[in-house]
Length: 171
Length: 455
Ligand SMILES: NC(=O)c1ccc[n+]([C@@H]2O[C@H](COP(=O)([O-])OP(=O)(O)OC[C@H]3O[C@@H](n4cnc5c(N)ncnc54)[C@H](O)[C@@H]3O)[C@@H](O)[C@H]2O)c1
Image (cartoon, rainbow over all chains, first blue to last red; front, top):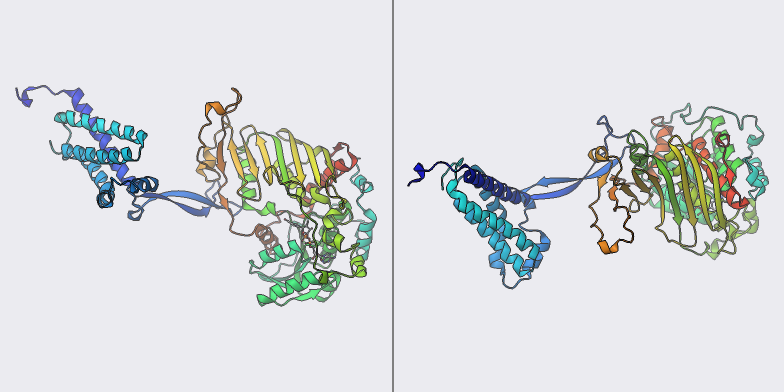
């Protein structure tokens, strides 16, 4: 029998679509957040009509903003711990950090749009395996379990990828 | 007990005040208009001065210098004269100003200064409390606006004479309760405690304190010792009394007046009410050479539009325990701990309190990061209330704490705004302080009738 002859398995198709969109969003937003930071702004306090408060008070507010210069692959506390690990040499870690955010954004976009789904899932799996290795070394068991959930979802998506529809490419 | 002058019998010196006032050439106490209802001088006088105007400072001790420092950051006033009975103080300040190329005329007696200085628009008074009324009243009579430090006077009649002089002269009299111009306090009062938000809900209790570690009395450099006749001319017995005037009943009002006046003013201002009854206990328990008590604990009762409020206030000058100085307003929806020190200020939302979403959206408050939940083993009582969500008031002030109050005074003179602490308003608040002192001294509860606060 060929694929053609089989009726569409809508349950599996929707399961893959759900996983693809979830993992795509997860990767895309995680990548974008690596370019986020907060800054403190001092602005006039406004009254109910939107005019400066009669007291002339200035308030400090925190504002989240995105910029290429904010890029940080992993939180600095985590980076510091990983830097102390002899099994994670700098010549491997530095390039990984340099591309991590960009690759997550790219993989996220391809999964959401639906191009190169399998290869995107495989790359995402590779990233999470690499991160898991780092967390195992610094004994962050909670983080390892957390990543294991992602790995499970990626594996499930790969298994279900044959039910791929609503995609630009079939791969 | 209900006569506002009763406490004079308990030690505040009426005769001394009268001597000083008449020595200053002021017949105000005998003038028929003293207790009359002249219009409040909150509105600026007839002559609106130009953008930059001349001022003088009388009293150049610790506070006079702090005010001077703040004034130097305000480019629209010129300090042209300074006055202090202690050459040591005036020389110090004169030299300080000279470093900034500011040349001032120096006077020992404020009356000479008023005779000679003809360009003045306003005077800042930072003398010991018992000199406030004579100096302020002379300046007002000379047609000058006055910024006078708190406590208005060490006697109620001295303070009342200042309101009368203000009304008679039509000039402005700002009292140095500087929290009233502090934007953080204004926002807390108008946008959190009062106004449409009433974010704390009905306030049922207040707790406040100013606790300072025990210290030693102020000394003076031997070369700066003043002659006994010079000291006597200005009302001081000796150098120790001159330097430590706060602790003497003829000269100052003790710690409830010195420290408490600021905070009790905040109770009244935030509640928009005056106490109905006060109980208090205090004593000179530690310092042997002070006339005023060094510690006092006061309970005020208020009847506000929203219901009764009980307010505790303590001033301790023998221990800094209990977290410094603050005024904490406790309502059914939340509580606000105000302090002139922003680090002590704290705001808590009751778990079942009404939503503060509007306050958050409009940046009046910001949420602090949630504290981790306590471990079950740390709980001592199964009925313990959950930890309160904590917030901050994000108002920032890049100025010295007295600067906005001085700016408000100067801008009011220019007719651009109204005083935040005009003498009549300040007096109503300070009457509550006099009542607490009376309660300490008589060891009896003191009833405060609404008419006691008519000024
Ligand atoms: N608003 C505040 O936060 C605050 C803080 C501290 C003091 N104060 C007030 O400021 C005033 C001064 O307090 P301080 O701590 O500077 O006292 P201080 O003793 O350090 O200084 C008082 C100065 O006034 C001078 N003086 C005394 N009699 C005078 C007179 N008749 N004419 C001219 N000068 C005279 C003294 O020589 C001295 O230099 C007090 O009323 C006090 O309550 C207010």
